[in-house]
Every structure is written in structure tokens, then in C-alpha cells.
Image (cartoon, rainbow, N blue to C red; front, side, top):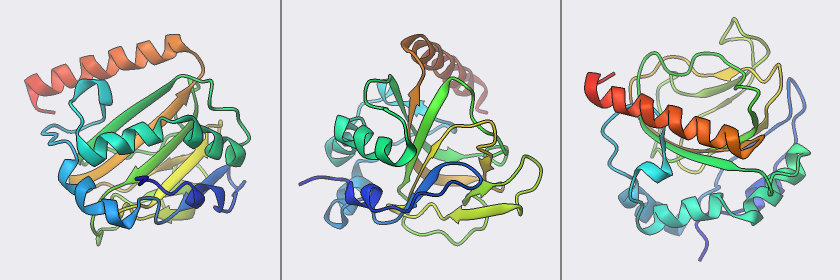
Length: 206
């Protein structure tokens, strides 16, 4: 039995304003949610960690494998208008957010597309909800908001105006992010930067 439901992507409406993106709900199979909750890595530091930096197990390991599959890449390619399957990809996981996270940004030019899936049981806070934004200056100038509840997802094509972010939130906010990059060199550079950042967070706790 699969962990993800690719029909959520295949049936998602394509949005082109302010940039190409899709939003979905129910991306995780209901009968896998309990084991995904159990198998989510026990990350004790903030920020994104690469999957290579941790031991994955059970249903969560299966989730990562399906997110990194050709079937996943092809399904998202059809929506975003890119051929993602041959591109290098970087999968990262976050459990803990800090108040400084979520600042408005577009993503770097080294990224071509990003997909996020959330794994939180419920969400009552306005902070931490991802917003699709029209510009770099105002969280309220948005076209959509994604609550990071279990199985909600967001995929977008990086552009000069692909502004997104969330209002400040500190605490547990579980998310898996897969990013498709321009070339393998960028992949190795991002892995190295991520490892260095996590090393210093381990020392200084921030």
C-alpha cells in the first residue's frame, strides 16, 4: 500500500497567479497516518535536516522513497510545466521551527521547483501557515494560505516572483520538503551548507 496519493497532485488545480503552483489536501493515505506519526524522526534541533543526516524507519522511510520516486516527479512535472524526473533532488525534514523562520522569500535561483507535505495533527495558530504572496513586503498581500495539517501539500515552480513565507511560529511544525535543483553541483553545495549549519546549531543551540 502506498503512503502518498498521487491523484491529489494529478487532480489539483493549476494556479498561475502570482506564479505557478498547486495546493492539495489528503496527500497522505489515511491508514498510514498513525505509523507516519510514530516513525517521524525525533529531531531535537530547529531547521531543515537532509535525509542523509538521519536514520529513517518504517512508514516515514517509505514516504521519503515515494516522494523521491520518478512517479512523483512526473506527476508534479505535468502540473508545473517542467521535466523534473532527470534533475537532482534534495529532500529535507523539519520538526522544530523558530520565530525567525518563515521570512518572505522566493527561493534561490539554484532551485527549479519545491514540494512540501505537512504532518501535523491539527493547527490553530495563524503563525506557521504558509502563504502564497504577491510581493516581498506584506504577509497579508496573499492569494492563498496552506494550514500545515496532516496531508496538506504545496508545490511550486521557482520564479523571480515566487514569494512565500509564514508568520512567526515557534514549536513543533512537521514538514518534509523535496527540491529539484539545476545540477548536481548545486545539490552537493546545498548538502554541505546544510551539514555545516546543523553542526553549529548543535554547538550553539540556535
